[in-house]
Amino acid sequence: MSTIPSTIPESTGKLASARAFLCSTQHLTDWQQIASHLSFVDLQCMGGGMMAAAEWCRQNTSPDLLIVDVSDCDDILSKVDTLADVCEPHTKVVVVGRDADINLFRRLIGMGVSDYLHFPLDQNTVADALANVIGSTQGRERLGKTLAVVGCGGGVGTTSVVANLCWHLAYAEQVKTAACDYDIYTGDLDLLLGSEANSQFRLLLGDAGRLDDLLLDRALVDIDDRLALLKAVGPNNTEQDITIDPAALPMVNHLLQKRHNYVVWDLPPRAVFNAGGQQLLLGADTLVLVLSNTLTSVRQLHYCLQLAQQRPGMRVFTVLNHVQNDKFAHLKQAQIEQAINRPIDILLHHEPQRMIRAHESGKPMVADSVPDDWQEAMQRLLGKTVEKPSWLRQMSERLSSRR
Image (cartoon, rainbow, N blue to C red):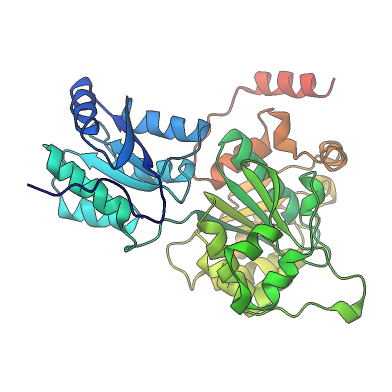
């Protein structure tokens, strides 16, 4: 008979919170029976499987332990990856399914899942597995995803893309998001998000040896429960130039990943030419390259694309942002695509009036909740497909939003 611990590790001092989402009535009944015999965890069992788990995590603070039944899922790895987007990084995840497949187990563990159990299950097997997961300090950390948004030249609208993306993640996707501005001297991400920065981020960048969660807490500015800002107030004169420790930026990002589903960085053009910026860029899950229709911007894009080749498998998006009217464009889209030998992934049209309103209100354009280029762009950057409404509906919604 297995020995079931009566409490979780002493350091927590309380029962671990746990939620289980099961696919069938029979599985739900079985797990409710199992839960009634577990004295070391507060386990609540619910129906709905993977979809219900993802929706619950969107609306609630994630528990210490999340158990998800994937018996009815066709593409398990994809579904688990989607769940990771809305489940807070501190939560340990146990996946339960029908397949006794060692390769599936290994791939799930590689994604940060704490354990994989397969049916049929009994009381002792579940108790041993959950006790081990709750008390375990070994294994790979489950971290949030990093998106690096790089400006290919000045004034191409990088910060606008970052602000809209962070707003979409926090309020449309309802996931914990960190918006980070690495443009220390002149960045204005705080203005676009209607917030204020402080000087603590400068201290974090100065010495990697001082980095810890307490210093990070002091540097982060909470816009609300799901959106935090990391932005430094630049020095007032040249005598206060900031000395940056190259090892600090990746370490800051790692600390952020441990507590946020998404970490989005606004990287100015010069960041790709220093060690810290390059490490962050090459360590990102997704790289977003924002350019304008100028030869200077295309040249910078070429360099960034070559740099990205050092990280095979990283998702790379090119975003052509028309920061001026199309008829004044130096280069046409077709010319740019021919120059870089690949298609432009996302096209953003020139909308100066909406941009001005966004700057004045401190709310990005996607806050309008009007389906448009920007809404679609944010979805695509997250790897999601979007069904575009008819042109008649789009026109009607645009006219309504301008009244």
